[in-house]
Amino acid sequence: MTVSPLSPNSPADATVEAAVQAAAAQHARTTADADPIGVPDDDTLRLTHRRLREGLSGPLTEANRWGTVSLPPGRFSFHELHLKRDLPIIHEWMNDPEVARWWELAGGIEVTGKHLAAHSRLTHATAYVGCLDDQPVSYWELYRADLDPLARHYAAQPHDVGVHVLIGPAAHRGQGLGSLLLLVVSELILRAAPDTQRVIAEPDVRNAASIAAFRRAGFRRSVDLSLPGKTAALMIRERHRDGGPTPDTPETQRAAAARSGAKGAPANGNPAATE
Image 1: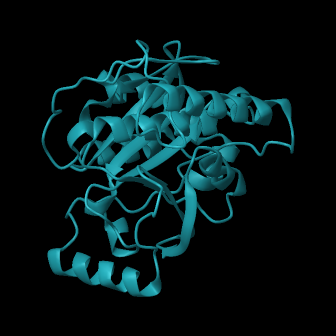
Image 2: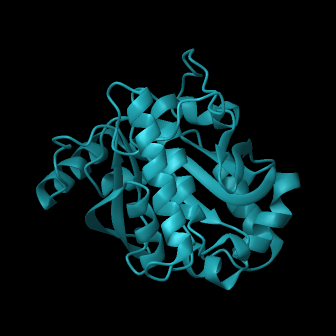
């Protein structure tokens, strides 16, 4: 994820904290078993109640049908990625130095195109453009982390969902938008995917702004992972925080690696991307 650091006690940071607190309070009033973090249950959040499409990525393939969430910055929604339409703007974002530092996809439009085309061929992942009032402001990759090569490096649980995200326009960074959208999207994932107990991310340990944004959105930093090309902070957002899952330890990581080795990684698996 690419966000600019917020200065301590800045108005933007206070706005995010207020939005998180208001969302949590509303969720507690409307949900019997409310999580500490949530988004309002109202007519702006129109998740289908039927079982969504089956398959490796299951509900993640239909995030563009999750509806619209009304937020202070605007109406947030997912649009399924269309290569011809979206390539120019994503290419522009990838060549922003702040984004390129972490995604490492700066260069000609063919560099971005190759990445998006390769991602579109994956069976366990889907890409989206996140919009505010139908204007593109973010790029998202949602994927089944337990079916990804990433599962070789951490104690994966069945149906773990991974998130890669960048906030594109520079004017939208440093305002707390990343934290707010991570809060909303992780909640939407958990509502749409009943079998998923955790949303995870693996930003570079040097990306302090990204790690802080995940924390403000309700993620906890579990363990640092040695991945190809980077050392990552494993960030976890759990459906139910009381008691929590088994912590990630060297022993559980080795056990997960053994399980992954036994069943094999997907042939078209995506190497862990940089946030």
